[in-house]
Figure 1 (cartoon, one colour):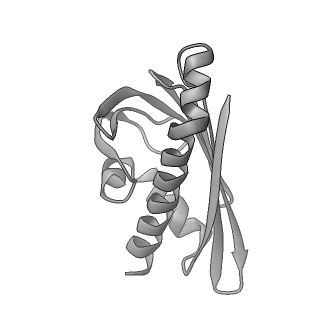
Figure 2 (cartoon, rainbow, N blue to C red; figure 1 turned 90 degrees about the horizontal axis):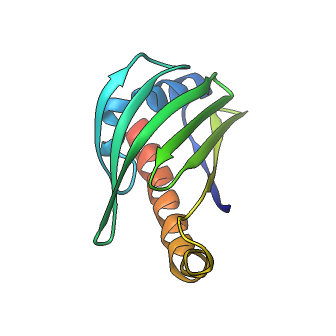
Figure 3 (tube, helix red, strand yellow; figure 1 turned 135 degrees about the vertical axis):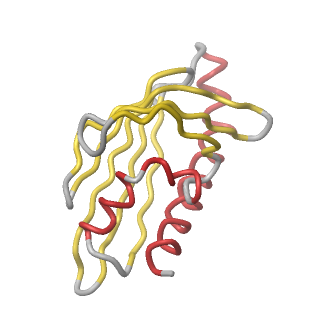
Length: 142
């Protein structure tokens, strides 16, 4: 299993960040490389939806289920080509919130998938994670 993570300080409350994360229909506006969200069922914990993600010339599709949604923690799991678990934690700091995101994912394939992940994919995913956090910050502070 592979892992990327990052954090950012956002001038917004954890509750406001949680609301933005639950607003899955608008996630493609700030989540790097997320192209499309469809068939959203529910809101918050238990919500499910289909997504399409594009990185470079490759598109991936899958399903997401939100497992936990509180003003301190938001967890979702994806299934499809690249299964993953996304864990967002929100820590209030004065008038800001430190938002941390850790993503664990599995690249299909055996040794070749692992090699490609360590050499190329992990760096692209780390960059996309940082871009997404920055875009979410801009959206919430703008």
